Amino acid sequence: MTNAKGKDKVRVVSILSNSLINNSWINRLVKQDQVRFKRIEQLIEFLFDHCLRTGRVLISEDRSACALVFFRNKKSYSISLYHSLMLAFKVTGLDRLSQILKLERYIKIAHNAVAGEGQIYHIRLWGVHPSFQGKGSGTKLLLEMLEESKSFGKTLFLETSEKEMLPFYEKIGLKIYHQIDLDGTIYLLKQR
Image 1 (spheres, rainbow, N blue to C red):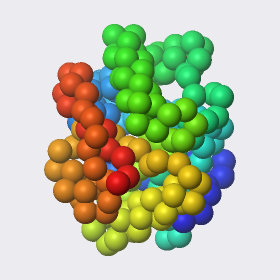
Image 2: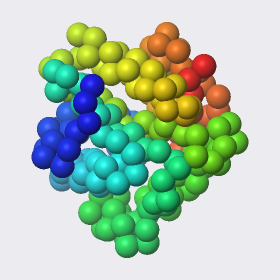
Image 3: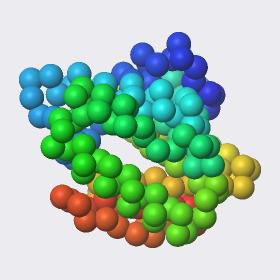
Image 4: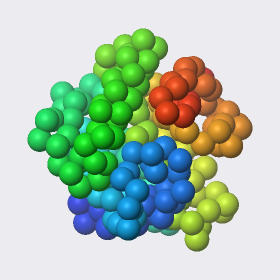
């Protein structure tokens, strides 16, 4: 895996938007209208920029898988009011913004209860481009991130609303430590 740069934004957005197009939680957050896919892309662009500032954007060597990683020990964890409003107008709609902020707060509290401030390697989003799925690049990327988080002395965390992904996550060394029921279940996982 390598660190993505600003020039990789188009590739990362393409990988994630195509791999997450049917993700149930993403589709709860994004306003459902005729430009839904564009809204998903805008959400990922927002998170890409946020993770470049507060963590890392990683891309597999074959450029088929990527992850948006965020380090809690950076000061700019919270989304500013300006960015929240821009996100609401471009992506979610005002009615969904409060749900996003509530979920972010719940996740932050749960992570801090387990790892404490400054010890968090948080995979915000990750995915494999659909034409490359099932070939191992996503698994390899996740395993590399698990090793990297250990080398940094941080606990790796991620969330999923996709129950069918839980056996895969458990197989590679993650475990469910909490769940949030907020218009559907969100499973919070951490490395063992």
